[in-house]
Length: 242
Image (cartoon, rainbow, N blue to C red):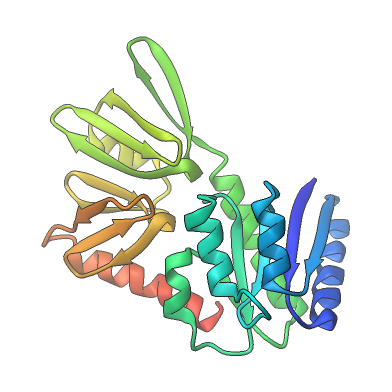
């Protein structure tokens, strides 16, 4: 069963979205548990009590704790990088503020069933893709690291350091070979020594990228135009609610 949370101060919006989601579940022969919250404070208390959602549809303008700060609570205070956050709002002007919370998508009100279905389909493609693993051996032991848990890979001499949400693993190999095994639309080479998961980018400049764990990685001069283009495309997509 997939746990989905909706947080919006408009009860009608919550009911409308819940109906769309349950219809989607029925059509796809799946089971969703959908829970609604009407304030950011109530949702925050729920999350701080060791509860979590697989997918969270989160309004920005909320009574009490707003949606931006709920996102910070999830990513920074709780340290949850697994919940898929989809922001919903009547305004597009928050896009840059949301970037640090690493939302999956941004939906503009009024809600349209077609758009919600499209977002859910994209989420399932994402979850399916990220159900795959990076496999490697170290000292005779086989490791399988889910793509969705990898922040970045770093090449050091003959070793590859795999930095994940749960720690660091190492193995002997080449970064170019690892790059061919990882999905190109998610993993981005920013330097001959770094291959990053774009889902975990917190902030960036033309020369450096800061990851969700605080690591500051240099972007090589050769890769800067490509990196800038891809990150701006990601921002634009969130801003427009695509």
